[in-house]
Amino acid sequence: MNQQLEQELLNSWQERQEYAEMMQPLLGKLYRDKAIEISVFGRPLLGASAIDIIKAHRTVRLHKGNKLRLRESWPLLEEMSKLSLSPAEIDLGKLAYTYHYELESQPDVKTFLQEQLADIVDKDDQHKPQDIVLYGFGRIGRLLARLLIERQGKSNKLRLKAIVVRGGKEGDLEKRASLLRRDSVHGPFNGSITVDEERSAIKANGAYIQVIYADSPDQIDYTQYGIEDAIVIDNTGKWRDRDGLGLHLKAKGTKKAMLTAPGKGDIKNIVYGVNHEDIKPEDTIMSAASCTTNAITPVLKVLDEEFGINDGHVETVHSYTNDQNLIDNYHKAERRGRSAPLNMVITETGAAKAVAKAYPKLEGKLTGNAIRVPTPNVSMAILNLNLEKAVSKDDLNDFLRKTSLFSDLQHQIDFTSSTEIVSTDLVGSRAASVVDSQATIVSGNRATLYVWYDNEFGYSCQVMRVVQEMAGLTYPMIPAK
Image 1: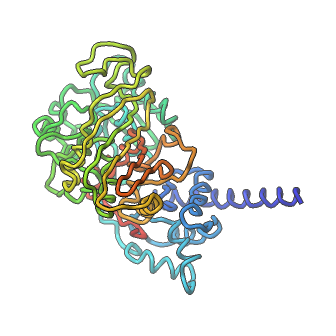
Image 2: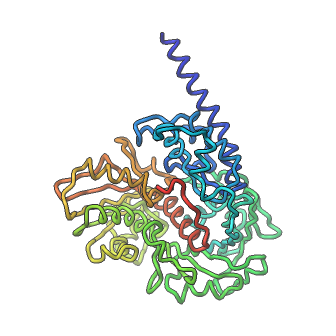
């Protein structure tokens, strides 16, 4: 009996591997040829390994109670690859689950897909390519480069054309390339990187990226590198107001600038999923707010809309950043001069107040503070909230679980029921935040929620979504919720 069971398990695993391996080339071809990004209940499969595909299917049972087998989703993916489709984000898992478990009568796969994908079948792609420049190549700049390069292909519309840095000393180019190849937190680059010393460029997965050395944005003529009407993503944080960021628009070959830090003055601070509809075609300068603001605002918005928030306090437990010192040394800010790897450091955060810039209904209702801790990445926000009405822990968690799967914020809010999850498990999370449901505390109308976020990668994914909106590269999501 044990041998029989072992053989059954082995056969089952081998079947899943074979289907996952058959899926991989179709997933890649759908993206490269048609700009179709496939996911399974929100888990992206672009560039996924066979094991990633299997694990994505396994998560379906956690949400729906039933398994979704790879042999059930495979026929839909195979048929999808034969259709003439315009760009979109398609959740294969949701479509397959509906087809196999929720229909009263089951049509053939082609008929089902023709109906579900009617808005994108036999439609022309009207989107034009957009040149992108990364101004600054630090933690966020390099992650944005990875996100842009992973989408490399003939259907890719966001094209990384250049990075701008200070310096230019001997060996600088190879150093920049090396930092893109290897990352102590996020691991090795998924692909091939070579350096063109003669032309001062980096070649990565078929992308040709010009490396430009400059001390000021307005000194650059991008057109001499074949760059036109570029969106410049400023990752330096040096300029945060309209006048400073306006220097980018004085450079030849640019049309818009976006800041990966909170903007000052009248600059719109955008948290994608919350207020991205505030982006207008005529807007030329934009901010993607902060990592913490992106993590907490979507969760606060849905809680306020469902239960009402009277007031609350946000405490962030944040990984240390480049702004802090490795060992005790002078720093203009209080406490931040003390060694980051050795201390918990109480500091301030403007994220609680910044929430109101993206979601004005909470203006004046939140206070906030931060503790920097000795971890290099992944942070947590603790939301202590007084709600307008009482709710149970189960109902609150169930609401957030459904929101993470079937709402307009499914890419911003993720959800975990694990009792064992810790910060390193969240490295590489593409969601703006992950609700730790097992840590939720509720007493009447008082609720405390623990929300994880990859303050580097998750935030960079949010930045990418804002850039896509600025470029007019918004694609339908199927099914919509």
